[in-house]
Length: 108
Image 1 (cartoon, rainbow, N blue to C red):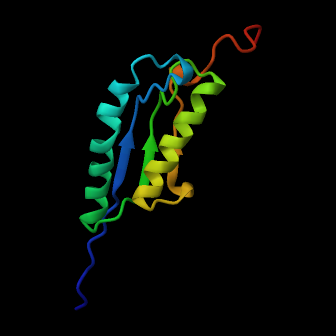
Image 2: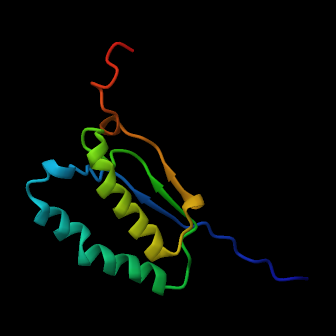
């Protein structure tokens, strides 16, 4: 009888980044959490030998949903999936309430 292989699906779940773009007044706080410590955590995930299959970002990548917030948010996401060797096709986003700029097309 053939030995059955164990199947694992490993998902990294990220949420509530709240990038403020040019309104960021305390960048040191974000670096404290998402700087070197974040990078070390990602490196440890890679080093343990079990690949990350999917990265899911479930809301609030931005703080007010304005275009200038998405540049830094994109850099963060691309750096994260790059460090984990996860292709963009395996990165999923579910927008949150802060990802929508409510003043855009208010008439709608």
